[in-house]
Image 1 (cartoon, rainbow, N blue to C red):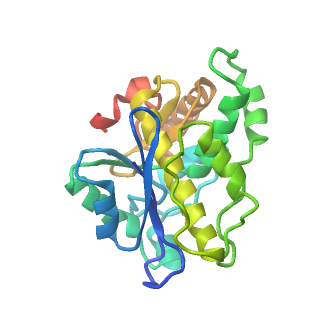
Image 2 (image 1 turned 90 degrees about the vertical axis):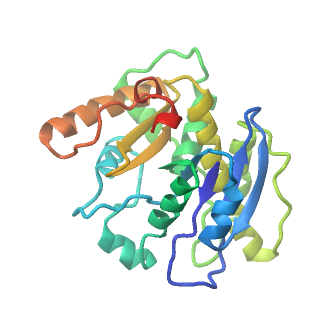
Image 3 (image 1 turned 30 degrees about the horizontal axis):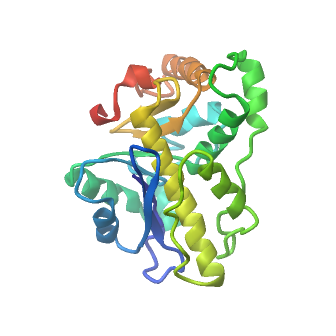
Length: 272
């Protein structure tokens, strides 16, 4: 399951809505539900134990600067919002994801964070570098990775960037059967906001499916449950780069999260 979480805790009447999406074992979209409250989100995830990836911070430790995972992501050229209690309070009025994660865990689910833009970028990478492609030297990989840009579709000034909605959805459609994509419930800008939320939720759900089914060199987990953990769509080059940078940052004393990142090393999601 994947969740796009509307993070702003200061408004009950925000125009945007959260979205919950599921990808079945045969790689089909089971549907997308638009939600307002945490209770609605947990209900949409369902009662069957699931791997649930959320596009919002689920752990906000009392640190200065940024969490360990953001240190690693920066060295992987993956932009991420630096998460601290002060930043979350200033930007969103709090950390809604922390309470949602607790409710999901209490309901029997396994949770972690995800970055939909990173998923979309990796899908673009996979299309250009299919299974069996030679593994690139890391300098060449970094240069090529920097050239990958996910379509811009998220809201700016209350409106989704609708020129990027179709390209983003097409990337997802190349990776899964999206026949169950819902018809718009609203019109105009509100419909575009819902479409953007659905794209984020489906990207998270696709990554959850990838973590459950794909080989261990196609996904990674960075971090831990105490300091924050992020699931990544990956390739062998990314995993090598992550391992090198985590080892260096741990040796420097900058981070204290586990060194294991490859799916084959961290174990199946049910063990997280």
